[in-house]
Image (cartoon, rainbow, N blue to C red):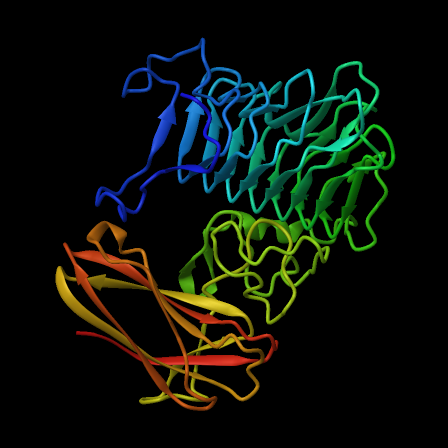
Length: 431
């Protein structure tokens, strides 16, 4: 395979929207379906020298170090919503820009899960070669990910070679780190202090040295929450970071599978009104979506982003203050959303719901009703935006044709720029 010169996408069709065949998509180092016979001599994926490739919705696992190899100057690679697992130990992803004339790598890793139990391996090892001409920025962005590792490092930045000019850069923001020591490690003094790595808006629940540089100035950190004894080494404390232990107990909410009201809650997401929500972040690193590809901010009655990989979702309440018919309606106060799972029979169906927003609603982005998750049955995602004036009930209607019985998700979103901007929904029907 020759590396492409423009983006090539390799997408796991986990919901069946492309092929009608839903299910996990796994690239594995095992040679047999029973996971007994393993390939211990080669990486599961070798991207050495390959450029402009995007992977989405794929599980990479293996028993060889590394699971994904990226050497010989690969560039412009994206991993989105993927999972990486090494079942015997070693690195999950090994990135290197190669010797000779090193250049920026231009990689993006977002909304991925890393699971590594190795004592010697690293979840994401980045080796950047020193230059003969000038310092340079590796240009790698790592955001909205979940890293789980015992007792390994999660991310290492490793300058290589004997040339004069240091590599630098790397942007690590809005991630959740669970376990490990030296969670983000700069391995030597050869990393730039004029083009530092930037570590913002993360949550660290780990061992010693969450951020470990070798020289002051190699890493800038701020708006991070640390729950470990030694938050940083050779790194200046960010003005807005917290590491006083006051939020250590609250970190347990990331491990819960349910929040009040019995709404399902993914591993790694906070409770509504958590101290991790609305925490704010560096103004240059405020993603508009999270690990689940859902809006930021949400779930905190706040217009500021939360830290870590996820916001809180499915936070609607029952209220009797305003209802279209009957006694109660659903209510979202401030930026937030609510998913409703709907069973759909094969054939044609109509789904409708009434929506309403208060005069306190702020901004130009009115509430939405989104229908998603029906790809396996041939139902495309649809988004309907309210057009009515405030304090007016408006019916939003979806017409779908399903190739088989299925379940779709109806998502109600409040996109207000005001913390008290309130959205109501009522009278859901399927016919």
